[in-house]
Amino acid sequence: MSQELDPALVEDPYPLQSHIGFKITAWQPDYARLELPLEPFLMNRYGIPHGGVHAMMLDTAMGFAGCYTGDRENPKLGMTLNLNVNFLGQAKGKLLIAEGWRTGGGRKTFFAEAKVTDDLGNTIATGTGVFRYRA
Image (cartoon, rainbow, N blue to C red; front, side, top):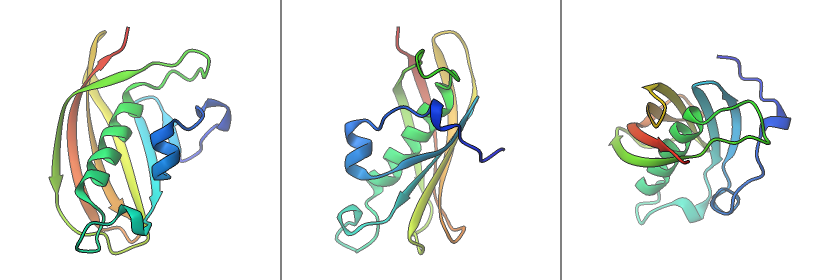
């Protein structure tokens, strides 16, 4: 996968994205990559990233992977129909990286898978999802 990101294709951050602080660092047909610096407000009572952060990163990476158009003026939107998350490990680094891949689908729905790692290469979570394109 090319890690090049054409800044002209990236949409302005939406409110949740701005609040949480993740950035889209790669986006092309059937693939998206997000990065999130770990901050104290993302941690749970144990001092590790809350599981909801992992789920949000997986969901977002898969959604973007299935909705690439290459045209900022003609965005494609998707809604999550089903999300499965597997929590596999704890982040040891300072950055969460989510990668999502569109794995199939058709005109109205698509399927995707994703993984979250940290900047040290530890696998933190994986997921699969089913998404419906918004009309």
